[in-house]
Image (tube, rainbow, N blue to C red; front, side):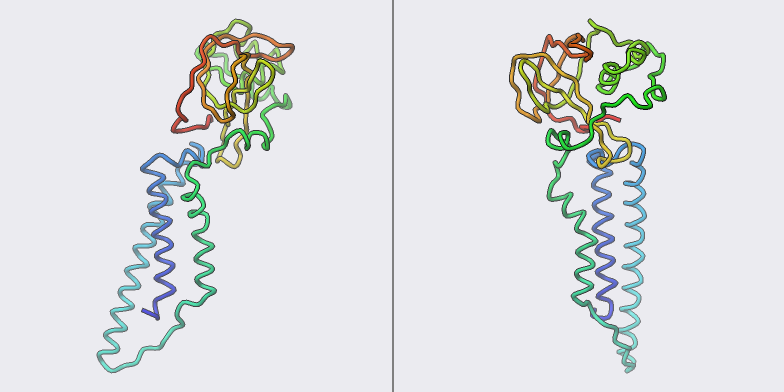
Length: 244
């Protein structure tokens, strides 16, 4: 066993990662970390790592069988070095990201992250992302944010005062008679998530990170579109908290 110690540890690490990817795949928890564009990585990783670990285990078993056969025939096999402290440290580094993700399963992006990340505000290059001229186009947080900065965008997106809206998001800050409702948009993974917020006019106070469904109509406060609510109700955190 000493001879195959290193290879066995590597195989166990592969099995751990394969199991973790299978968990993300089957439970749907991968949406907390990556977006749809790269979601293929999860099933691919689960299958590829699982097969690699299985092959490693087969070769280890065969090597052990050969060693036993050699010893029974009186031939002393060459002794390879066993597991050293440096090997164990390397293995720990390989599994540390997985341990962090498992230890903090609900580390979704919230109000603190939103305050530290660059917001989605900014009109630069907006003409390249004008919305499709589709009457069924679902208006999003990003649309409202961009419409506040570009009248052309507002017209093309069909955004105007009095438009009825139904938005779900989390609270990221309160002002005098207002609070911000926010969602993160993910392109590739949670690391590139960008927050977009809509100001809601309401005298009620809500704690940061409280998830709400707000139904109402759009109004204007200066150059900004705001949501004037008819109904505000707390909701559970969505299974997939991000928009894409």
